[in-house]
Image 1: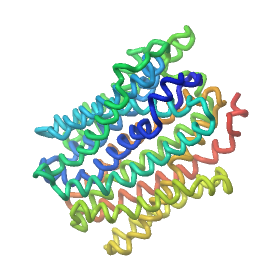
Image 2: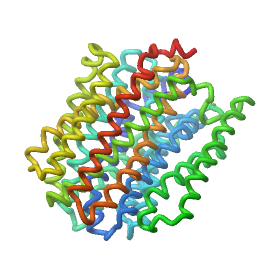
Image 3: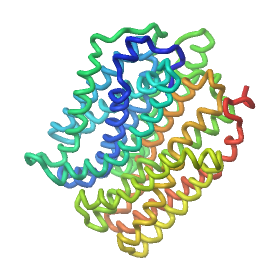
Image 4: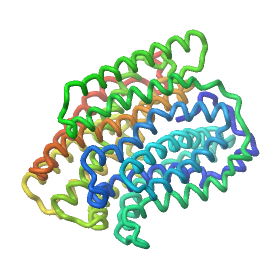
Length: 469
């Protein structure tokens, strides 16, 4: 997500923020997300958590992260990217410490929400800093480092998170999974020293728009997570209606602010048809991302009764496939172009169906490894290229604003997927774990197939959005 301004960073700022330290912020956030997902079964056992509470542990982070990303970008423009980056790191370290010290689930969920806010504050500044490095060669290396940070965070999160839980240092159990975030984010914040950072001169932030977006998305996801625990009472339908009304009011406010040249969070001029189709595709794809990780970690524990480190070792098959196509995908994309996205979506659908069939048939873990590898490779083929291609449907001058909207939809999709797929899984899991897991993967396959069907509606749009002008 790039800022709306493309002015290069001052020399002092570029020198004060070495790229490795900047990309550490991206690594920390990605590591945290993947590490927590594979720790969920341990949390369930240690804290006697019910299904809704486990879903909130994951979804609270994604909701606040997604809903706050554009606001975080605006705050960076207004108060300075270096300052907001450092403050985001400090807040992430403190929130991670609070999560590690949580006396119960309510505290843990609250700390995860604050982690999401901190991630929304620091993440936009990473790409803003990388995109405004004056030297073109250094700027390209910065974006390569950003991709590497994402890849290594996704790969090391499950392994190191599970290893920490398994090692149980000083008897802290699941709390150990937050140790890397506290140490790395705290060290990076001290290195950046946000209290000495220069300020910015961007437009004001419309707090009403931020609040409307956060409350509306929360009202949309809450009934999906809480419905099963509450017995699906009829009054619960009020929340989705309120969410819809809130989003309508939010959109009307964006149009009004844009008309009067105010600080709109989302520029209505962005919402041209190819870009809207791209956003729908991104939302559908990311609904299958976090939910897949969550469901795999749950059935590895419930069906195969694996300890955390053994489950992480199995999950590594997905990580290997993901890393291989993430770092090798650039050459493939140069050769195959946008067709690679369709191939990735079809491969993901086939892989998810394969897992569903194998789980239903009671296959061994060894038989599952190639299918997990295929799914990981398909995720890698789609994840970064899909976001980049969605941004590319609009003119380059709007890339910063478009990136903010795409990444927001990405993380809201993660939260929505956990709410929907997690509810399906937990509704069936008590009596039929294998069948619940198999059905969940059939639904994941349906989401991947939907991505394959949606892609042709917009990927023919020329890069730079020439046909959308």
